Image (tube, rainbow, N blue to C red; front, side, top):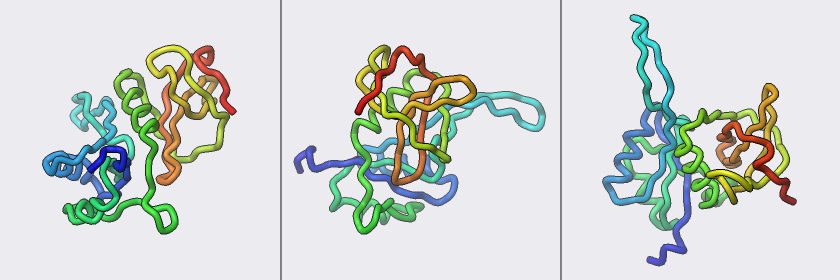
Length: 168
C-alpha cells in the first residue's frame, strides 16, 4: 500500500484505556501516537513524583489506510473512530507533527477544550518554525495552539509573540 493513502485517524477508547490501546496498536504494527505530558502528582502521604498523563483523555491517534479502520475497531477497549458527519475524521499530518514538536520542547502544554477562535498565525522563530496554529491570550501570556476541531480539543504552549506572524 502506498504511504500517501495513509492518514491520521482518532479513536475513542474506554476510560483510562489509552495506554493499553496505544500499546496494542504498536504491537499490531500500526503507527500510533498518544500525547503524554509529565505532571507532578502528590499522594495522600505527601510523596511527590512525576507521572505521565494522557493529554487528550479518551483519544488515541493512529496513522493508517481507511480500509484498516474496521480491523482497528476490533481492538479491545476501542469504542469508535471519530467521525465528522458520515466520514471518518482525518487529522492533518502537520497538526500531529506540531503537537509532537511541542511535546519534545519539554514546556508545559495546556489542554483547552473550551476554545475560542483566535487569529491564525505561523511560527517564524525557534523549534516550531513553520508550524501554523492559533494565537491565544491567557492571563497576559501569549500561547500558540493547535486545534483538533473534530474532537473539540486544543493543545497550546506559551510562546514569545515576536516568534509569530499572522497568516491569512
